[in-house]
Length: 491
Image 1 (cartoon, one colour):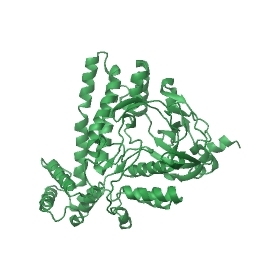
Image 2 (tube, rainbow, N blue to C red):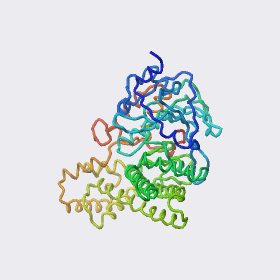
Image 3 (tube, rainbow, N blue to C red):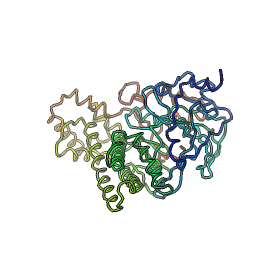
Image 4 (cartoon, rainbow, N blue to C red):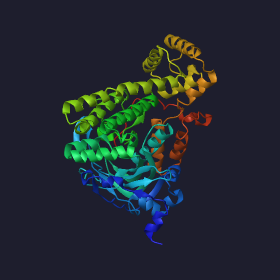
């Protein structure tokens, strides 16, 4: 039996539709082989859903593919070209350390990208080494899988493989490759790239491809490119509202990090908020707070406006009319995001019908949470289980009045206490990837080769709404520290 046929036993079933776009959009690029690949962690349930054999994926040939040392039959490795506004500044980018192996066709008939991240230099590496460190790759694995369990659209992590090589950042670090699974890696920046450096036919080819792949329901519309814009706006409004509802801060919402599919992508300096504060920033490089928690809806619209600008030549032959169509579509974003957010916040408080004062009730709670530095997740968890004394708000006159008003609001709807409690349970996670828990797991794995801490954390995070007593330790806050938590763009 040949080596490649052994690799095929894993279950790879590749198609390569992206490679059929104009060559402007990619460079054919094999991963750079690594010295001594070793499996760190594999996502067996995800592998099975992709049609892969989890056991065979972990043997020598399987790990060789995950490391980039072997190319499975049917793959067409390439690096994608794109551009983007990074902290508001436009630049040429591209897959500087990632290679798309191809698109796996799953047993359910779905098409997903299989990408190796940290797989070596490409034509878009911009003086970088094309490699990735183990810690950031494990971090993306943890956070992306936690987001999936929370019901938030996201890229996912199939495996992390160490390379046996050292990479140089501020210090020497162990190298690693992450296998990322995505609906696609089409980005707002992909369209910006086409609009700046391609012809209108290149732009049209990209838009047609995107419609066919992600929005087949509007592919035949008379105004199909306007429909494309509207559908992307809808998905981003829903996605960012979900981020806000769980206190997730992406940290680097550049236009190249906004996926057209509506998935969360590129987990660099991301983190979950503990103390509620709209100004919360974790990223060490976001010194101006551009991507703070409270700014995420604003930046979402800013990014979508850049997407609309790229699409203008396809929206109408007359530029003024194209701009008017784009502005009308963009005007719906804030309304849609607000509807998703207010519906989600009401569910977090057990409210199912509508009253005029609902928004005030919600905002009054958030104002108190900010004033008294209440933990975002644990406050809603305490309210869910009728334990207001466990919140930082308890004992204040304003919270006592708010709590009375909230209880009266619940009494004015027909739902039983049991159904209200269940609604709150299913919308208020007990556990999130607490920053200190993530750091504990990364330290144990990277510094000591102990993956048991990470595996326990992943198990708990896979059931965020279970509210199990044995998970209580993962709900607790870290010991007080005089230093703010900082994240870095290592992924």
